[in-house]
Image (cartoon, rainbow, N blue to C red):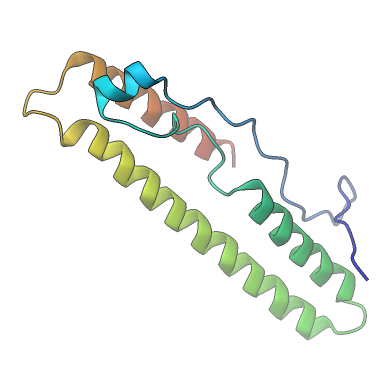
Length: 130
């Protein structure tokens, strides 16, 4: 029996909806900066993973009455998976971001530095909202 996570209740542990995905870096900018991909403002955890993890956590809460220890163990395991996923996503985001300006000539162009600074700012703001 599939259960959808409910939101808004006092015991709600579901993951909030992900922010809208940012558009990909325009081709001209990608060629100029060497950054091919997205702007870095997309969610750290893909929406489908968020949904699966939220469902697992909600299931643990629901199962508490029948098996408190197993429910808490499942919640612990789910939390570990969330933290690990965020850690990996942040490490990858950092690697890509650093490569966007550190691997340039010793004197990175002002535009590449401006874009890198914006991405650092955007990612920091996203993290501070957690």
